[in-house]
Length: 220
Length: 230
Image (cartoon, rainbow over all chains, first blue to last red; front, side):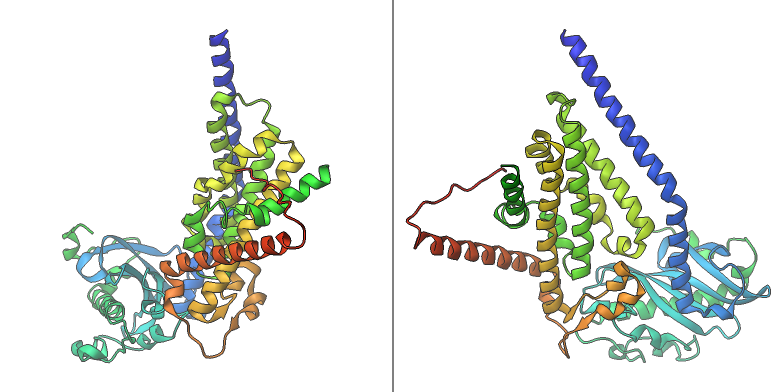
């Protein structure tokens, strides 16, 4: 009798598990395409903020290359670089670089660099955990600070100018927050250096450009 | 009788036994996401939907589930519902989903939901169970919205910021800027959540006391026993 009761109970529990899993699997199946499409759309929207739609004609979200460079791109993990081309010719690269030294952890940025003159086309923060009201001024929704990078390059300003004003550079910090803008300025500067050293490798189709320094796999 | 019953359920969920203000359940998401009104609405609606559906399903299966497997089955049902809601939000409200992040998935661990399943839905027929889910969910939602609005106004000087994430681009105009005020940071940060919730609970208790006093004076002290379920 007890055995029978146990068996019935176990089957019942099993049946609920099967029904539940089936329900979740069906929903997943129904929403999978839509979710993937949403993610592509969100990515495209972000990319278009740093590089205008009419500047390129390739499928920028899929024309990518993975690169590793801990010293210049801030992460030991592969970094995605989106390549913008017009009629097959390189226009710009959008590097998803990481500023590892934000006030509360890493800040992920999109940095678009023009191929021709190696100047910044645009910078956006795509992920951060900086203090609301202080460090989050790097977010384009909160202020237009991040827009000040546009047009600058390795030679404009020079090495010493690529700092926040407090450190003698040309980029403003915010009241009460120096660490955050300092980390962002450094990361943008480093991505310019990376781009300048690797720009032709980056545009070779499908070949993953590797930095010699990329071997240096530190722990994060 | 039945009508009276429904009125009691409504009063319990919205006020007397409010999940956030009286039972103090589900504090983790409540405190974490209420830095804006829209976040509060988003999480509140998702939690309410979970409560209604889970109460409904649990009431329907209450006679089949043997006591030994009651809890695993409830957890299973709730986890499935939350996963389905999470997928649906990711598909239809993608940006809001990104904003609320992990807290949607964490609805599973909101004790509120298993508490209603255990103490109400598993003992009552479908209709009252659904209604209980709706009322408890609304009670929770209202606190989330009140706290979110309070913290957003004091903390960033806006109201309904990011409304477009929920209601589409046309809702951008809903965002209200409170003049030139740029906010007191404390309200947005975690301490602001605790202080805000504390103030709301105090306010509720003050209202209750004033009501009780008013009632006690004219009608010669026939204190009705508080209907407590939890």
